[in-house]
Image (cartoon, rainbow, N blue to C red; front, side, top):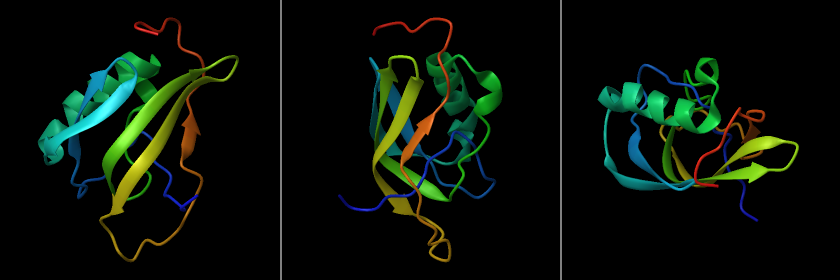
Length: 110
């Protein structure tokens, strides 16, 4: 299994994002966007996770190419980055590519 970089729901001022639309709990990249999409992204993530305060920035300077969200019993929502791209080549730190956010009050479509 190839190593990947952690993706936490945060934003950075110089991060180039990809537009991600929600199809059920699957996220699909449609086209490249800039920080203008931050507000929309935060809204989408908050709707999925139910935790608005955890949707503030990406932990690493990444461009998300593909990601998936799964509901794990007793553990909450899991965000798994399937493919990403390092935007800041100086940041080579590698972490697990799974992040848990806790169980939201309700999960629609799942």
